[in-house]
Amino acid sequence: MQARRRRPLGGPEWVLIGLAGITTFSVMGCSTSSYRADADSEVYRIIEEKQEEGLGQAHIFSIDRPEETARDRIRALLERNRFETLGQKLIREIDEDASPSERAEASDSESVGGEAEQDRLDEKGPWSGRTASQQAETSNREDSDSANPPQDSEETAEEAALLTLSLRDCLEIAAENSRPFQDQRERVYLTVLNLTQQRWNFGIQHLGFLSSRWIYSGKDAKGNDIQQVSVDPNYTLSKRFEQGASIALNLGASLVRTITGGGSDTDVSLLGLSMTQPLMRGSGAVASEPLTQAERDAIYAVRTFERFKKTLAVQISSDFYRVLQSLDQVDNERRNLEQLNLSLARSEALARAGRLPEFEVDQTRQQVLSARDRLIQARVTFQSSLDQFKVTLGLSPDAPVDLDRGELAGLPDPTDEALAVTKESAVRIALRTRLDLQNTRDFVVDAERKVDVAADGLRTELNLVASADVSSRRSKLGELRFDEASYRAGFDLDLPLNRLPERNSYRSALISLRAAARDATLQEDQISLDIRDSIRTLERSRESITIRKNAVDLASRRVESTKLLLEAGRVTSRDLLESQQALVDSENSLIRARVDYYVNQISLLRDLEILSIEPGGLNIQNDLDELESLTDVNPE
Image 1 (spheres, one colour):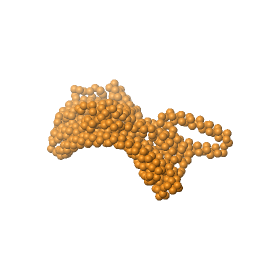
Image 2: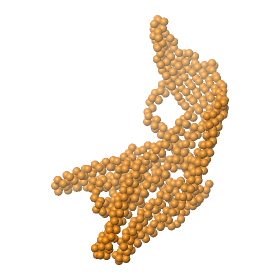
Image 3: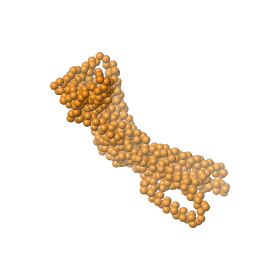
Image 4: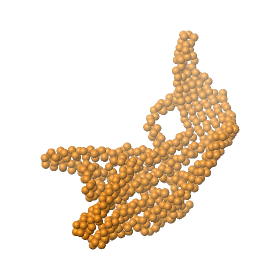
């Protein structure tokens, strides 16, 4: 029997098969890293666009953290310190049994190693040695009282390698490690990522499919197996328009080859075109509402993140100076205890000379005990606030860090002059520039659109549909018979006979619109109230600093004069104790007032939306000239 001759594949067939194969293997070859990089590239580009649109300028944005964060570096430093402390302890034990010459050699090598380590730490910027606060703490332990036992050498060695952080360092660490900051960045990214899909939905879609089957159809009349192989490539090109229309072009084929047994080959190609155009419900701007809302949500997310950065920067700055304030109170209590110890010694000497009754000496002893208790409590408060601040920065509570006490001396010292900005001008600026208020006002516009969309759902649905299909003759793949094409056109009508869900949605949209309008007016009033209160608070803080400075000077003179009067026997020891306590209270109140003024100042700058954040981080550009120039800005 003569074998049946197989028809070779023609050019169009190879084109379809090749296109399907290339599509399949190209998709299989894409790695997950390439998808991630593609998503990041598109999202970051859109974020830059939205920053220009919503903020007027673009900033560096990324959700990727560095491979080694400050938390990691500090943890490594802590582990190294513990290891070195143990090593130093072993060296000391060995030195006890070593000869004098061996001890000298070990001392020289340790000195060289220590200098090299210090040089390496100095290259890290803030990774330096002891700070003023550490020295103050050491002085506290040495000078307070004998009830506090001296610290061992291990703790001293660990403290000597503490990391000194300035305010700028803390802001940079927060940008790397703060959990809320990272959450906000990722929220912006995810919002824009949703926008990329909405844009994709309204773009040109390319879809390719390829199916291949082995087919066994039993045996023919002569008992031969009938086996076939089919290949069905398919390519679809579609587009959804923002006015509601959609169009799709489909190019497919079906290739069947008989391998063994009787049977025939089948090659068919098909070209299809379909179109849908809403004429009433779902037509016009309402069709692109998901895209419109996604575009606006991206702007809202960018504004919210910018506002959050300023709020977090204010929080970090406030907490930073509150911790230093606690440390300053420790020093005040330590000096008070030192003065009370001197007073106690003086009282005891006067009592031995018969010039002071014993009950007044007991009063001084009691005051010394109270001062010791206050010093211990101040230390506990400082350590607790420092540990909490570490967690705020995203660090571990046991991270070996300390704050640069020199920053406290750089706090602003306001003059007696009144603020240049007025309440009225500040309110006008805030109502125009506040990013959160801009979002709230835009929510009203969104609510108005939602009403239009809900109203559109009440309309009759009438769609124009049309399609055309062209196929090839059997075994003539690619030779489409346009003269035998089939065409279809018509209308799909959905009468508004049952619109209860749509009715409820429309009524809810109307209520939501009124609620959004109320929220906008309420926020405007609240901002006006907050700005006025902030101005008044800042003025009060400025005046309070002047008053408390005078109180410190007066309390200092009172202590000195009371000491002289006590030696002359004209006052009692209680008067001296009260004057010393008044001095401590005045000093604590002064530093509290200075910190309050700084916090109120940067909070006002933030609420006026003129607190600048450096690109790529949380570093504050605190330009007070902008605050004073607000009165020169004309309201729009």
